[in-house]
Image (cartoon, rainbow, N blue to C red; front, side, top):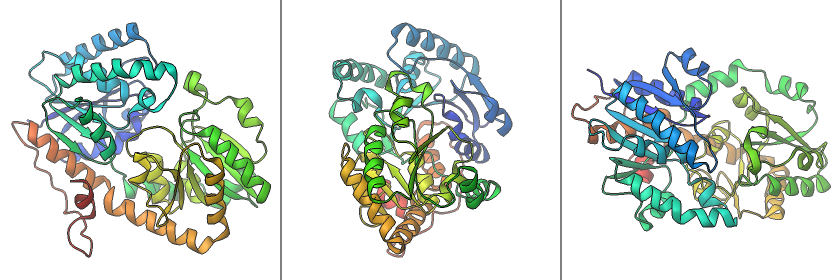
Length: 404
């Protein structure tokens, strides 16, 4: 029988569908569980189970979610349970506690609001969450980290437990699927016309519109760019209304009209990226390897991002984009203007960004790394049929060299 993986995430779990399908193609039976709409999973032919939890601090809701997850694990009887996202990485180990038939893998794809915010509430909750992670580690067979800084952080506070840990960047980018989606969508000219941006330079940001994602800093930078270069428009793509008290207000965005345009969540992000000139990512959040950055790089966009651990794995300062400190709107604006002023350098950086993703973050390479991790925990190893990763001219796979 094929090993059975139950993969648990939050409302944006659908973004991992290519990863889950690739695992299925390589001999793993996959069931997904999350809090979002199950329609994309049904369309992809994946078994999907819905459950609920509160993304914010709510102990009663957390206890109810643990009970639901315990029932799911009992009913599905998987060999492996893998969790993604801040809350599931705590809830799943507690739900599986005492069930010796299943191996739990936590995937630390970011440290979340608790560890990113400097608010009094977040600072007060940090010791509690560290203690909860140490308890969760007791029921965890393996912990996977998506960047080196998060791994160091967990090790410093003894949150990895006795199980092995691995460094695997992201859930992989389905390069062929991304390009097919971009090609099937509206053309760059059609999108610009539909958005009323035919004669403007576009700086795009794809993220949740929250303070921790640096949106206030971006709005300040947009105002500074507009003073110097009024032909620039900033396009914000992503949810706002669902982000609760962390969201920027619509009034804040409206103060920067008409040079800032928020279009909400979109299903045509690959096409939008192809229509843009620059990608800005001002996050102050400790993430894993942001998918938005990888997709922007794959689209051939030069990137200006903050010097956070998650961003520095994708953006090499001065080579395929620029890194600036968080909370630095003047520096963010200056680097955006540098790229707009020197379009030849911007095109070179964009081409380098795309090649970096192809070499180090492809779906095939990522799946190979995960299957190697699963095989450490399984009695009946998965026999992967992947091709060998592309080697760089200096010897060895670029991805293996940086992340193994």
